[in-house]
Amino acid sequence: MKAIKLKSEVGFSKTDGTFLPVMERFYTIQGEGQFSGNAAYFIRLAGCDVGCSWCDVKESWTISDEQWFSVESIIDELTSCKADIVVITGGEPAMYDLTALTKAIHKIGKRTHIETSGAYEIMGDWDWITLSPKKFKNPLLSSLKIANELKVVVLNNHDFFWAKDNAQYVSDTCKLLLQPEWEKRALIMPKIVDFVKDNPTWQASLQTHKYLNVP
Ligand code: SF4
Image (cartoon, rainbow, N blue to C red; front, side, top):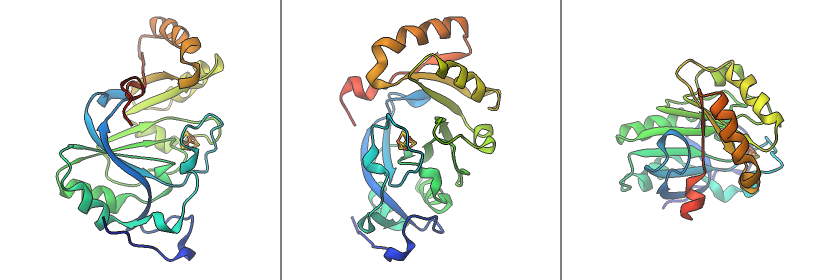
């Protein structure tokens, strides 16, 4: 893998998207949502200012100079991967213009999926948008409207109201998912089951990769 450093003055800001800060890349099984169970190559971009207190990837919040790679070098590694699906996650990937990356992924015949809080305008050419809204930085209306699935992480009873609030703004075809916060799953999952039985347009979502013990 070719590591190409970007000058440090570019720092924590949007670039033209030809260089992106990559925290990690890995080939695994998608554990959540509509594509759960499918092989997928994950690109976790560094950088997030949403600040969820329960975040399980806090190490993704900051960016170092060494993490910047050209789209070309990201694609070089991806070309040999058998997965049809490429998931761009974070951090908060929508902090960056992902037009160049998504076009390059399509050029090698793979699907582009993003997992975002929706707090920033979603730029790029996407086959699937998973929007997981966060109370710490509200999603944009424009992002909610183009989501393919709305995945709300539930920690407490109020989150069910928060989920319904957000669902008002998504399209008719958007999947509605409720997922227990991992540490509270034993307490929350029975409440999600009851909610889904009362509100069958919603589905329960599990972090199956954590049960399978894969990344
Ligand atoms: S948006 Fe995601 S990466 Fe950012 S703080 Fe929240 S859970 Fe963590």
